[in-house]
Image 1 (tube, rainbow, N blue to C red):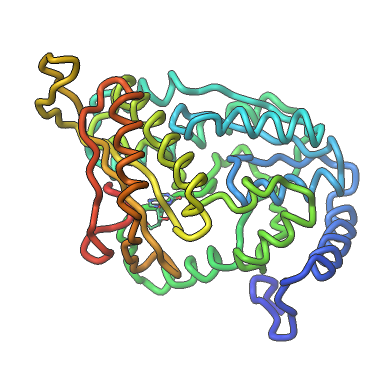
Image 2: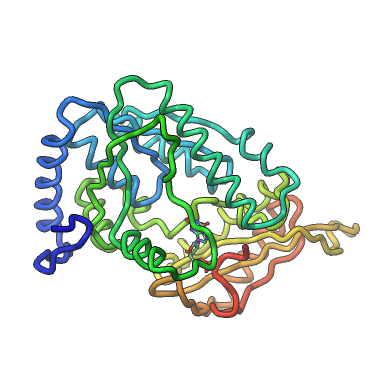
Length: 333
Ligand code: XMP
């Protein structure tokens, strides 16, 4: 039987009872497979890698070494939350690497989106591999592969062209020849979330909206600069906070700010104030192949605009992107 094919008989995990059963079975399988060996995991803080980490911590405790690479392109407080939940609450064996300078150094002056993606993807592997080489006796690599990833790779193997080069951890150097542990590879996203809640992960982590691997790097449009990246991070945090307060966070699939590399003339405190525009993107979709625009109540948009322009240095306008996909992709790059 092909273990990458979901059996027709497999029940959809929709309840805590089914999730508990899945967790118990996977713990047995993981223990039987890895024995007393060490397992390495790239823990991004996304739903999939977080669920795999929580599952493996239950199964093998500190034989799991999780590495969180902060590429400097995370959203506000995201890396801090990963450390808080995994190191402080779940007592994970966590290696935290702040690689901000490495990433931003390589990205300086690079404006082409696909080059930015390639640099971020390749450097992510370099940083992770550097950490892996420092560790001894690791035989396994755990990955948060889920069933749609497998279906997508099948499609790509059949020669269908991808619009953008999305990346996961893959393609590690040959000297790091790990065996793979992929405990959630037959699960769909909604099932991963049910399992995550059953494992006791915080609701915000389990229901986190999708966040691209290159992070804010593809939302700080064109060549990234530290000041514009910082403005983006702050504006995005305000958007998320206001969506949370107004109850939109549970209704909109993905929402974020993008900031282009242009400035316009504005006025503040009776003086000329040149600043960047912050662009709000808020979309709904089933599979991210097409997307529609969510109607956001004007009072919410006014409040977000007022907060961003008053609280975030460098931003003097807020725009709302009305473009569905197609023709706009969800991200701007
Ligand atoms: P687009 O912009 O292609 O986005 O309409 C569709 C979905 O994919 C996410 N996205 C990425 N995810 N690496 C990722 O892991 C990437 O390079 C990347 N680019 C886009 C995007 O956030 C949306 O959910």
